[in-house]
Image (cartoon, rainbow, N blue to C red; front, side, top):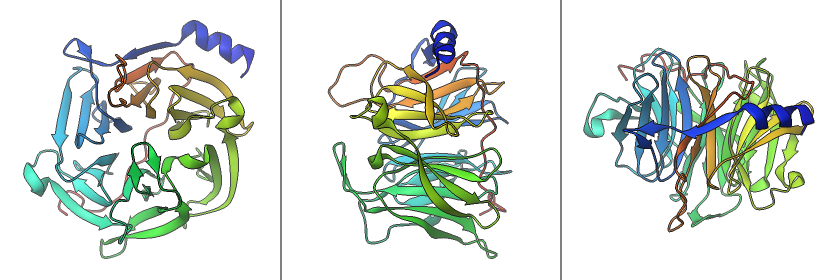
Length: 324
């Protein structure tokens, strides 16, 4: 960490949970935050409660869509559509917020057939509108079976069918994803490796190569943590949530070093994204550990005055998504 960055952030950044009805909003395991510039809203999921949430920035109201199909790990925006892309267990669906019951979900595709305990764990669209999503192997408590999962990319063919394409296998806990501002690098986390990695990225063909390590978190003393969700800012720097570490790391990927670490109350820091009218507020999702009392565990935090800002989120491209 640079002394300049340490001094600035310690002096000026502000962190607080979001409030709904005059009290902190607490969730079981919040994940997959994404900021919608058009509606000035934060979308995220509460995985085991099977809920998709929308937090309205101006009114401070929280809206909830319950899905009763199994754990919901991902929500993503769809280009030019009122619908959302969601991952429920090992399937991708389009979700219509305004439709009730099962009809709200429109199945696009499934993955990891023959591995019924695998789930699609994390994913994001790239700048071309493809969706990249990876799975996680069978899990008992906090333990996940290694090397049972896969990273996929998804895009519709000429007939509109979404076919998953294997990109990387095996992985254990496919997690954070981000694409460099010039669309030449994909940053990626397989949490079990405790590393943030990079690949050369061919945006036109949707292919990756040249795998290398950007940062091993154990070299900074985070031996008991794993990297989870990540995002990128307008300077091309990475911001990574450390599960079991209660920390956000601000990383310069070119220098391959940590600029600063932000400590949060609670150890299950899951993911993060930039939001707010100027995209300069960092929203951080967290989860709660069963039977452990931690007042703000499971809260959604905002970190302000970091001196950084984000870029608008990429969206999944699917023609005629509203009528599918």
